[in-house]
Image 1: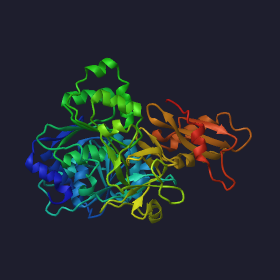
Image 2: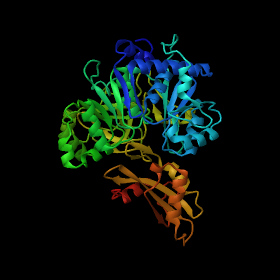
Image 3: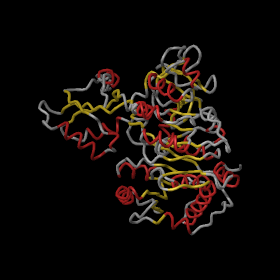
Image 4: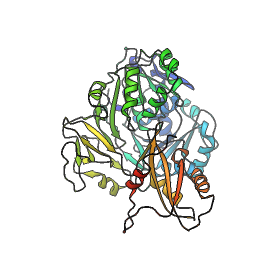
Length: 510
């Protein structure tokens, strides 16, 4: 099929009239999607973008998102999807940090995009999708000026997704798109193929890596169409599965939880007989929730353990039922290493830091941060800080996520970013943010602050909540904040965050 970015072009020739993307804002056949990707690639080149230049996408789940991605994949461009739930300052930081020369904005987020454009003047090429945004060109008009035939000189582009770290500032993870490794192990189970009547349901927002890759890039590259949900709703997901005879989907455990909470009569009445495969990852899934899904949908759940930086293990339903709670078996015997605090290999069943092997031609780096890149690597392996163990049969189990990481509904939240906002209040001397258990979301955000005076302001908690809502995206804001005399720190100032997590492990069911 030539360049990886031209896989869509292959299917456009083989099955031009087959549905590639369906959404509430319009549909695209493989032929239409391919033609628009070619038009956009030419439009971006006319506007001065060259191989290696960056593009930022702030867009909901709609066909144009897929067009932008496939235009970048064949025009040699680096694309970065950005979460539209973020504040304007947060979006602008990513747009500037990724060095975007082009900015795509969904007209549904006009106010956000207007603010971002003012904060990010270096993104001089600005295209508005689905309507008008002041200072932006019309996306439709821009592509209408160009031809839809395949571009003559395709160059492989790639994605750069953002993840945060202990500093709280998001960092771009550069991993050139490589189908030979990117589709091995974790995505071999779906057995996609044209002519099999298969159709994928994209249940999550494509600005996240899981839905972007597993629910759009992978199925389309295999000649299978995808139905885009505008936003997650459990009842609507069931309706779409039944109406479109969906065969495949990718979900996170919060979605499982909400599906299982639907009225019993609704669940019993739903025709889910078309379903063949459900992939899930991004967040820990309780044994009870997963067993409930398997009892309802059948043994079609496949779990994977991966991060933006790379993947490492997967497990099918039969093996998982034999090893409840495992996140998978490493794709090769030496792919996962468990290492103790002294750097020694841990024996079976002893928890330690999880290191994953760097796959051939698929190493990563943190964009413009060689220090952080080196710190994440240990020889041929890397870590994101998760803790777990391998059992006697080589299956991987997680015992703790990265010390600072909170995973809420499959979305990573890094406490340092929230702590930095809390510390801006003059009545706060110290701050810590931890994850507490939530039946629906997996974890919720809990703030704990050390007061600066013996008598803190009576409205301090309310003021802190308002401060967070003003400075942070809503999903990052604490659900509650405790005010204490002091936080548990060592003599040299190290915060014992594990103690706080254990103290609040009773958590909340919010």
